[in-house]
Image (cartoon, rainbow, N blue to C red; front, side, top):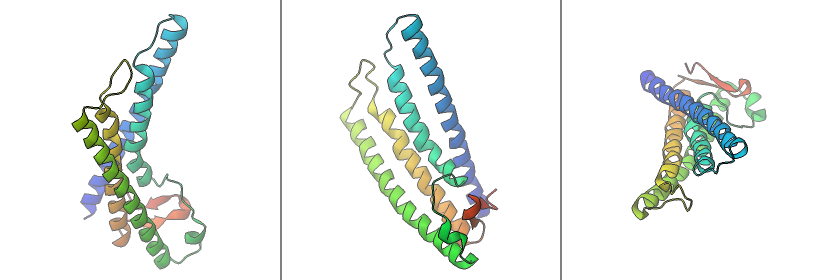
Length: 174
């Protein structure tokens, strides 16, 4: 069980790195766009769209890593004062609720992705990027986030991970 959770954590870490690389690429493209527009007086065709979709992709693909390192916003006043048993129960219940919400988003993202593929949707710009490319990270990232939530729930339930909400991370998750 522990090796499965470690594998899921490794996948989340990998996509956290991918998200950082996507943001880095967006920074370089913005710099290139500034040089083209303001110094060379050239027009840009794909840069704005690329940056927009890459930032969205980084957000969704990086979400499982953020969950892994407990970077998502949470209110920890009540769990901070609870005994370990109720704190554990509260962490599992909160994660189950979040899992259901993320599963709904993953499903809707999948439906949107399939509509874009089947309909041959493209952006209404000169670049005409196929929209399935932009929608894929939403569906995939939310599915990965669901898998990471399942790993967190299993880890807490079987005492492989201890919820340490007040410190902002899970102890024993590595």
